[in-house]
Image 1 (cartoon, one colour):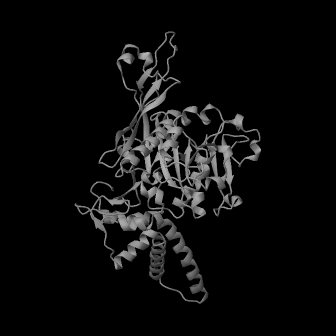
Image 2 (tube, rainbow, N blue to C red):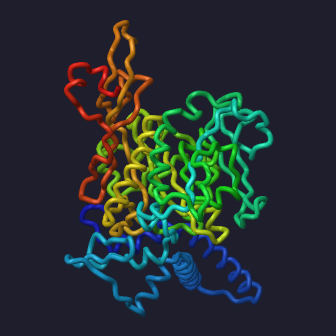
Image 3 (cartoon, rainbow, N blue to C red):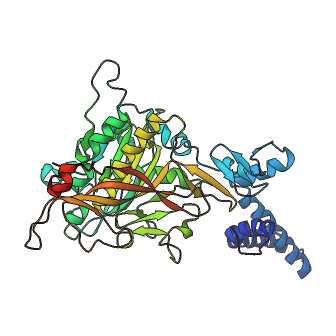
Length: 473
């Protein structure tokens, strides 16, 4: 919403002037210079006020042309002539598809006209239930690849902290323009423990395979293997499957290689409904993919606990160490070939967050399969302040872990469960932590709240109570 006490109509008129005003003024001056040159050559001299009037008129015309170049403003102009009816809820707030107005007469149709159409992103997480031979892509440890130079540029860096990748889908017969992005790797061109696959990331992938492949084999043939290392796939293969990309762009090359064309489809032309989240730094000339933080464009993001006074709305690895993102969109390679496949990004700043996201995704799918009315979505802010969109995205956090027996302190500590801090690194962190409790952020109400998504706590019986170390035996 705009500033308190502001006029929404005035704000709507000022917004395009702020955005296009300088550009329109410079173009108007250029056009005026050409006109003045012709007038001077013909020997015609006009009064100063006429020159000012011509400049003002040119500014208005150019500004109008720039504003109306955006789809939603074209639709707004059309709707002034042809008023298409829109559905409203009991309190007269309009809605259309996955768009909801937060006030009467909110421009939901204008936002719909300027959005990037993505059936998976707009349909909620239920669209994942219709999976077609889904696979999961995980990062490859360096020891598994002997000929790194034979892999796509950027999968392994030859030096520097930023590894630039140049991807050309046309080589694989996919009609997409080539693109570049950067990955956060380490000095010397290698991947250290902060930028490599963590084994915890893949522990719950069998659960996810069961949740996605409950229908069994297709066409009488066994499905492809579910888990694929990043160096064992290519674009043609990815375009023929539904995808789950595990980990951020620093550890998993295909996170950045798939996310970048998705991002560009939402940015050119700019969609009125943005992507809900990402793990990239947009400040450089190229997208810079890492795993240190999750950028948010959620509705009421400034009210998320822990972000109330933040200047940047992001979940970083220090304040939200167990957070993660789950984002579902159309598979860009399959889309370019006219196929219907989806792609899910599951990643967090740390392995506990990523593994919790995979567990949460599997649990979410099982819950939706059991309840035909259930769907998981998150609200994002749109180009209009009084319109929100429900999209296929979820922010999760791991809140409870199971750990193995250890003797870090010199005394044997038995196996057990622990509620871990969610707003700071755990001072009693144990390497054997495995997620058993995951929550998700629900922002459909007035204030975003964390709600339980899955709990794998073992049942407590009499024998376990007498001997805690046998709780998971």
